[in-house]
Image 1 (cartoon, rainbow, N blue to C red):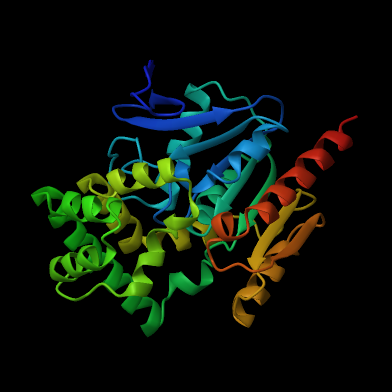
Image 2 (cartoon, helix red, strand yellow; image 1 turned 90 degrees about the vertical axis):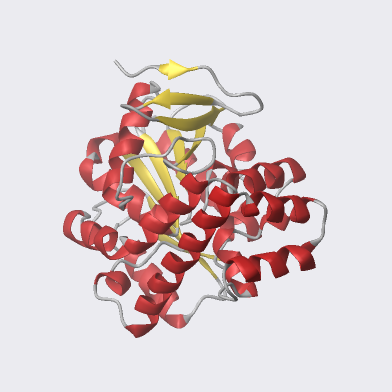
Length: 319
């Protein structure tokens, strides 16, 4: 049987063998239901650094690294949301994290947790979706979305090459020294001028994280496995979106359900999120003030409050 292995030095939590490769799981606190958090496209367990400590004071809180990310090993390809959802289920089962779960998904993680919920409805007590990817926008992408996919795949290919040659470590060292201008110049050479300042937000606004978390991420972003996994997630995003539309229910019944949008989001985003919240009779649409797409880092209290209210409501309903 796949077994848990000893944690690596400095790593919170543990590594769990899920069948030939290991996934990193970090659980803290105690109580039920367990809250399980899945991050954005390029995010990891570190993305929840401003949220997990508060949630763990209320109940058991778990974050993890998808295969190829953070402390986790590389995993089988392609990295579709459906494959990731199955791996997350195996991880929780093998790590003996008991159901039911409150699943929290940010952006791409929203696709993963919706698939998890559709495949294991009896083990999901509630959903919190934060600026979730809208599958309808990706199943038949227009020119703008196709350009984003091509651009993301190209940049990941450059990143993989830089990681394999050691150039990524040089960039990380410059960033660690605060030499941002030389670091950006080197990235420009690596990407042949293809990386724009706004592209840095794909990875996360890491300056909002504690210094130790930033150091961990800088190391993670020098690994070929990261860029390979991210590139696969990007190139298969249409398949992932189709999986959700095919499998996820259009009616969540009375499942406790919160959808969080940045208050500054586009009208199209706000409409899509409000419509998704209405698929449950217990659905709520929450606006996070003073936030961009990275709500867990821009407005963590909004996420903490939504999770707290949902967990308390679930506990009250069983008394």
